[in-house]
Image (tube, rainbow, N blue to C red):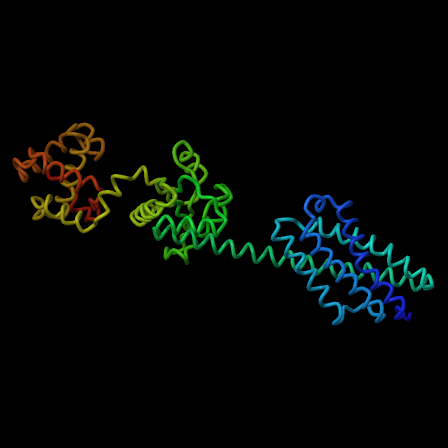
Length: 400
């Protein structure tokens, strides 16, 4: 079937009516679409009016050419519709109101267009074709706006994500407070009072984020230098909320650092990292429960030197004997000399404890009465550095 075309005279009549038609369309949208009722005024209204006039002019050109293909003349209208969709996304609105506006606007515009066509003597078949062209044209404009809306959302979301990653990196690097505040503002992130660092395997990140505060910042492993471990910075999880945090992370193989003012969370990150490096575990760890261990292992070389110095009386013994006496002395110090408790700890007879401690006293002499030596021994042996890897033959007790 041959497509009807507008004759030049009718097309000019429609062009002459474009400003009034655009105004009627905008008024109809304001009246019938609640999403635009309160803010479509002033400069914004003028801008929308121009966009509507451009769109209507595009339809007239299509009708004049007798084509349904968008073609070159329509590209300006499609570009305007695309930008309109982007603007809706930037304003935080969904496409619902805009699509409703297109439907209402199409009906309002067609009332004027059909009136002009009837007055121009267009036959009913031609008017029906022009009506179909109107609504096909509106569908194309709607699709262009939807594409603009989706693209803007994707772009805005990724840009904000990059800003949040940048903020997280600055926090982990211990950047100055002013730089952190500026980065938080750029990212649209409201700083909490405190942050708590949580280290989790990358495989657990999605499930961990599902149970954490929505404002949690995430730094992926490739951005932190940690092998397949992400850093999560959780807002305001201190005090009574810490127990809840540990509870929801119970099965996530996480390491939870201390709570710190948000601009000083680097201290929480570093402590969690040290605990993770020192303890291989598949359970969630709380740094607050391992403070002494963290303290005594913060300088491994110093601890090794302390052990070599304070355990020198045992240095010339066979490995098995040295291990037994180290274990016994450690338990003796930690249990404050309660022989039965030491025996239960080592799973030996109390007489065996007495025999071993007699050997220790012979080797150390009066030094075991020196508070400074006792302190050094508690630190050196309490750090859990006693290694049990010796031959079973070396562990046999001599007859007492």
